[in-house]
Amino acid sequence: MDQSQEKLYNLVNLEEISGGSQEFIHEMIKLFISQAETTITGFNQAIDQKDYATIRNLAHQIKPSIDNIKVTTLMPIIREIERLAESESTLEILDAKIGVVNRELEIVIQQLQLELN
Image (cartoon, rainbow, N blue to C red; front, side, top):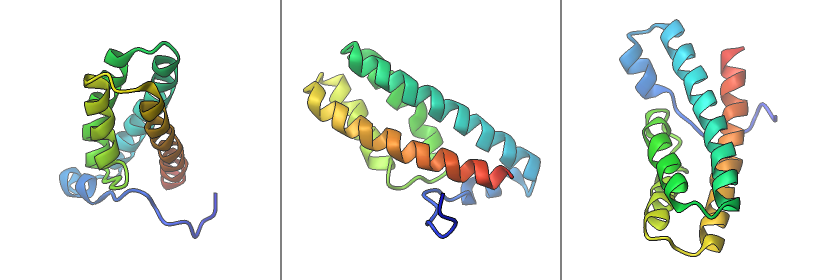
């Protein structure tokens, strides 16, 4: 990854609630990475299976984590995915939006892994 690429997240919330504990911040980053990887895999499987309930649940579960590390580009789209899955919108629309989320999450995962090193 290009070191000059702008971070897609901001750890200010974690820094505030951690009381300056780098160990806490690192544990929260690891937790986010794990959840994001699970979400990406789950979204891909759910789209293939046309499983609206799983799509909605995955979006709902990762929403607070996205908010917590301030991935501002994903905040509105993850809510839209949750809403579209709830209303069982066309899969093509959901698939396109999930593709955007998955690509962004993969970038955030790479950036956060650098943060841990």
